[in-house]
Length: 359
Figure (cartoon, one colour):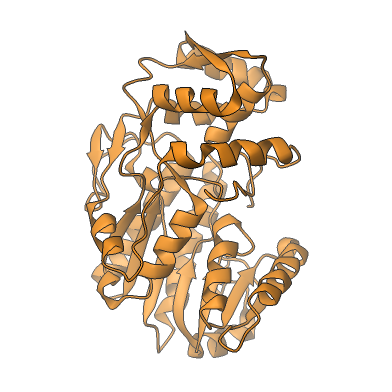
């Protein structure tokens, strides 16, 4: 039996595939044809580094989650017969995504993968990677039990990820053995700083790095009142890899977020220390700043990112904290200040990386 995984060779999908192969699982990855060459290089690298008696292997299949049969054609039935676990990570992780693309990839794509899972006769688990930001602009503390709360959304990325998770939870209610993971804002590896794209907090970091020793940072409202919930990739992957192994996680929702997130003001202070900048905060109306960023694309800052620097939501993760403490080697989210230096070093050493998302 094998694992079927979507989202390879993406940021999280690549790391999770590496972990599954090292565990001895054979992983079949659904790959869009345009990413085939990149996927082949990454698969070969993972297999080389995981060589051993217990390691599994990777099979790449061309396909597309927006098609009802995932673009698999005649390969679909035998693959379903050989699959006992589905990991669905493929999505468009783009805050500026259009409604049309977001619905096709995030919503319809998820429903198509759910249909694939329903056809797997020996399915043990459907593992779904959602996001904390299914919360939208929920005013207050958003828990792992929350989902349909009448919230408003910042963008179509949030809207479509919310609708996708609603679809997953409906299938769970009908008996699908599934687990849902909601990461916060994912940044690079806490130990190496490695990342695949510069978005989210990286816009702020790169803005500071471009300035002299005294750097100006526009702020929205009271920066001490808003939290930015950031988690490193290795924490998210460690958590999913461990929680997906235990039977007790079936039917659960886990918010993989920082239990002690920084406020915007604290993040500016930490970035300032890590970059050697004295940060001067300048209050600016959000609407005006969005207009400036929209009219000056050469600044390289996505205007939609601003909504996460006056986000009224806090995230509770009691379910995840409790579950991650019960495993043999507990998984804990490191404090942002403990690894920010590694993120900064990586950005300085890799200016060629862009904010572009895989779609």
